[in-house]
Image (tube, rainbow, N blue to C red):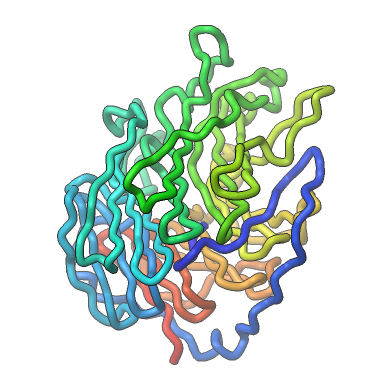
Length: 396
């Protein structure tokens, strides 16, 4: 779902009604650059799990992970050094924008901010009402959890910055996974969405829909929902999404929210008609490289053989059919060009598409699970994961 620098333009996805969008951005030629680019395993200097990476430029990047781990490179990933931060909490997601500003999620409820390229960091706590990161059958950290357990998706979960001073972040509390329909005793979505317009000094909670209609055997009843990801184009629009599986097979309570610009109201996208309910698409991760093209990852289905990727267009309909290898669990996706995307997942597997329809594994040395990936260009990417793993794609 992730790109370095300002987040790329997103697109409306699976719909009950259509979304009108600006013309698509022209595709970036990538064939020659990709032919000369190779993946390298970098010496991170740590064995702690790393969860994400973010970049100010192709050579100035950060990697974040467990126990307050913050690593930095100034030479395109060839060497990394640790940096001090105000928190020893798990650092989970990072978004960079402009020439010197980065925002890091310190779970469960703090955002670390720098406006001088990492020389100094400030901590800002948000009232997300998540006292800890534990739920029954839920583990923190490496997505390759023991059988019967899943990664904890609690507290602040993602952040996106359309500019150096403006960012959105999303959070989920245990009520976001409540399998009971919304009622007087279960009134809210269990998730929250926050906006800063002053560089992270203050954050304001944004109104969002109170529930979503559940599809399947749950009889179109409204449920709460988590928010797992958010992504913005420069100056908007912005999207956020997430889902929960209701019961073992009853259906999904899924939300896909959109706002046309930072500070504007959020609504369900594509918006269900007043005459009856409809279900939102199931998404766990999203990356949208153009105003009329978006790739979403669903890794929640109990019936699928691994993750699947679906492309959506600005008309609100599924785009070209997308294939991915069976049995892969995709933890993150980044799309540095209109038809070029990378995914990172378990067992160190990185896949790539250059035509927007077929993802195939690329030759990469990692064997550890990869949790996050970011790309500055089609030939400059960073993937991070378990045991301090950092993979860097470099030209030549």
